[in-house]
Length: 284
Ligand SMILES: Nc1ncnc2c1ncn2[C@@H]1O[C@H](COP(=O)(O)OP(=O)(O)O)[C@@H](O)[C@H]1O
Ligand SMILES: [Mg+2]
Image (cartoon, rainbow, N blue to C red):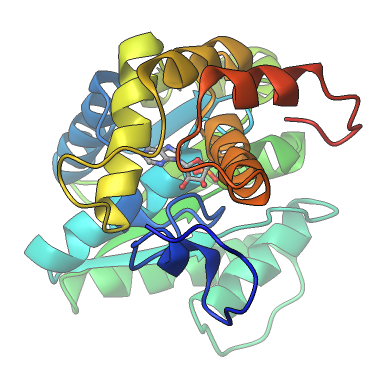
């Protein structure tokens, strides 16, 4: 394996015999490693949605894998169910409930005009009724970064969840959010009561961290039997990142860079130790 960065135009991972970058930041479902916690969250979330349970909230710290899980959830419904329509909201920052409602109107492509709150809400309800009854569609609103919402938006969501036919809700909502969202929820008992599925994503333990690193390398094309990290290095990575996926991904990326720059062929404990000692303000 050549580890020379000189005289080569290839991506660094090609120098390592890989076909893809193993530790890129994008929440790419292909690199997903199903920990017990992530797997359980995904399976239960899928089931709860199929049972039309209404409101689902997944809480996790920054970098625990929420956006990745949301992509995987979508994949599951694209594959198996054609009657689900997912509407994604990635940055829920509206000034008030009305702005949120008008956003929903645009999202659902509802044409007629109205500027009073009840009217807009009525139009949304009609759209949902029409989707449920005439198009036989199950509408799901998937909101990422839910902690950016305020009390007004929570109230709109609560109202939306009241819309139902005799036997099912007209819209279901899935919210992925950082822990501070819990505080907002706690201040709104009637919203809290409606949460049919709540889940907390936790960081990885040591063995999952090791399996996570190995899995990403395998997906990136590392041949079976070859190693890029020593066992000791992987344990130290867990210790340093406390098992937070984003931190693991970041640290592993920088360690591979250090390995190449130091002309080494494996990330060992010395490299990890050096990284941990470094004064770099952007240190992971
Ligand atoms: N279970 C997992 N398997 C593989 N990679 C993961 C997993 N969970 C998170 N990651 C990676 O960690 C990083 C952060 O994940 P992300 O979904 O953006 O977290 P969050 O949305 O909670 O901040 C991404 O690079 C993602 O690919
Ligand atoms: Mg995210």
